[in-house]
Image (cartoon, rainbow, N blue to C red; front, side, top):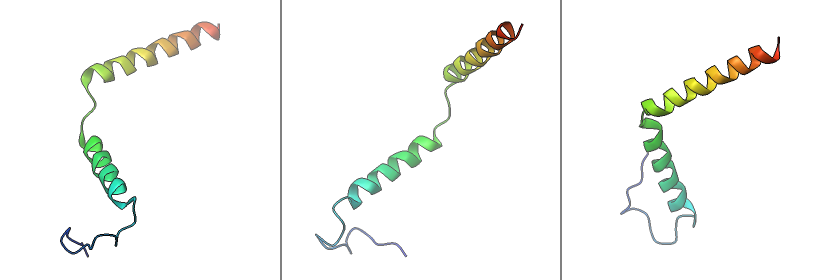
Length: 59
């Protein structure tokens, strides 16, 4: 059951409900965005550097 904004009386919602709702909407929007290619390339380079660093340490 959803409640429209017109059905909510002033003062009937907890004070942080609006903030919580906005944060949830923002989080959902961010989750739907894809990971930029540049960021994925950077992560791959970091993984490669870590692997090569570990192989040098183990020798």
